[in-house]
Image 1 (cartoon, rainbow, N blue to C red):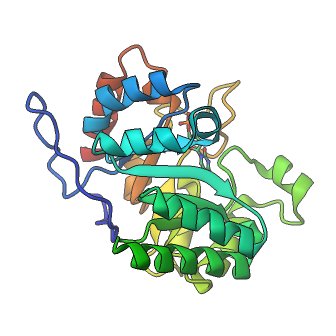
Image 2 (cartoon, protein in one colour; image 1 turned 135 degrees about the vertical axis):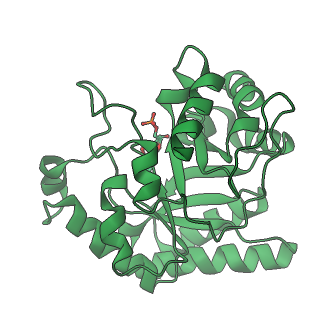
Length: 259
Ligand code: C5P
């Protein structure tokens, strides 16, 4: 059974043909990693009613901009703006304020930006939302990208063990007051030992089979296992949008989440 999220994401109504899943919320987030607004809006219309939120990342945002965020919000979907801000505190705070004004429900910053940057981001989300009379977006700290293995990590940090680096960054993020983290599903159990239960855990790196040659994701796990290990939200891209039938793929993953 999935943990209950302490999040302000509005619940989605399912379609008449497909009754709602027997859980308090839908933990699946579809990554709209497609090149343009047309493709994104098609996927949003088809798969949006079957997932808990739609994620707009750097490819789509760079191509289609804030107008697409508004159009996806207009479909009734919750939006996760995954631009992974990593800059000085003042700049990140202003970007978070702009994202909050766009009425996104989740957004990402890099924990490697440091405690002061994370505090500035969280404060900016809170203050901007308060001035608009809205619920603040969940500011998620990205720890170690799920595509990084030990060899890649040791090339850019002094710490070759992804789990130890995630622990270090997660402690920093939690102390800085972030209410959510992005990590691989492999680190979830380790995080449970010290992270407050209220901190939302979001995991990409969801795969139905062990990592295949050519896949950039290295630290992966199945959806049911990720939820069992303490994930609140599962970010899934290619296994859904690149499937021959994305709706069927999303529903099959949700069925696994219920098993
Ligand atoms: O296609 P796939 O399921 O690998 O997509 C995973 C999504 O999650 C992508 O949009 C990727 O940018 C995002 N993501 C990630 N690792 C992180 C944070 C976000 O893979 N640490």
